[in-house]
Amino acid sequence: MKGWRYIAQRLPDEAFLDWSVPLEDVEITDVLSGDCSLTGSIPARYGRLIGSDGNPIIQPWATAIWAEKDGEIRGGGIVTQADPDGKNYGIECVGYTGYLAGLPYTGSGYAGIGADPIDIVRVIWNHVQSQPGGNLNLLLGETTTDVMIGSELTQAEYDSEDGPYTYDSGPYKLAWYQDNDLASNVNDLAAKTPFDYHEHHLWVGDSIEHHLEFGYPKIGSQRDDLRFVLGENILAAPQITLSGDDYATDVLVLGAGEGATQVMSLQGVPRSAGLRRVAVVTDSSIIATDSAFARGQRELAWRRNIQEIDSFTVRDHPNAPLGSFSVGDTIYIKGRLPWTTLGTWARITQITTRPSEPNAIGITIARTDKLTS
Image (cartoon, rainbow, N blue to C red; front, side):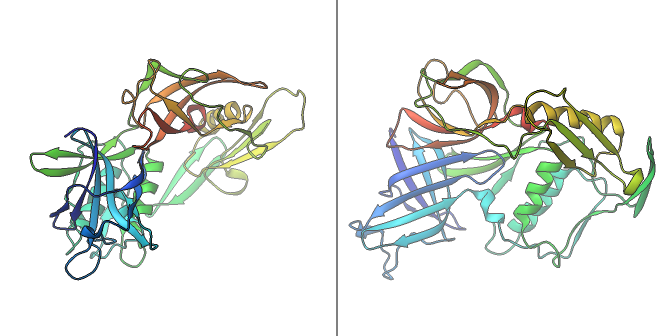
């Protein structure tokens, strides 16, 4: 089938409710290591979407809507908001990863020792999907990491250049009395390991199959074959900010330990114009002075360049044809503005599609030099 259509399914049994939901003003957002979304509205004149009980067939937490173009699922998820205002029926959907938000762990307990963080994510999803009414049929990718967390030790001691220090350790635990937002558990594991995750959905025969893929240490690649250029495929001058809150001439890194034995590194750049500003970075996972020094160097590199750009709109163009890049990819951004010049590598963290604007998409990015700090 050519063009866009919107398909409604009942949850959790996935029975098809409507093959052509008349959504208008649709916006589809694909997110890296976060919750995808779909929003839109249904004009009130479409009475066929009312069930025999007099209620709309599209109900929060009981319906999924999928956006399909040319036979491929391009986004969608669970309806979380459905707001009739007399003229329209507003719809908000969240991707399947958003199902974990605010959802507690209710099992008998889990204690991971030497566990792969992605395996812990699997434990979380297996628990959630084993509950009555909780099975989304989400299939988890097989990626693993070389990181192990959780230990039988209750306390460990290390010697550093600045003297000995200790820290508490133990198993990675899931418990009903402490874990009441499993999305936070997953995002914390992803940030600290680190790893990426990304959901996607596709037709397999007459069914829609749901996948959560992982990437260690990341999803995507550096795309030397593509570029975003102001005046070529970036449609309008993006908003650029210069945040004094991020600026620093010196960085103080505080690592593990306490008091005079705490791991520390203080470094700066040669004095030039401007006042001295010191950024303080605290990270208890840093257990050696050389690691603190390296962290300080990375922080200094980006804090001396506080030019920030976070989003823009691109059009279909040979520089980067729409569909040739995905969330997770790193692409060079360049351009000349009246008072500054753009030139930076940035990672795509979000792509927003509006079917009413077929030749342009919204891009949200993160500077790669900041991501390494």
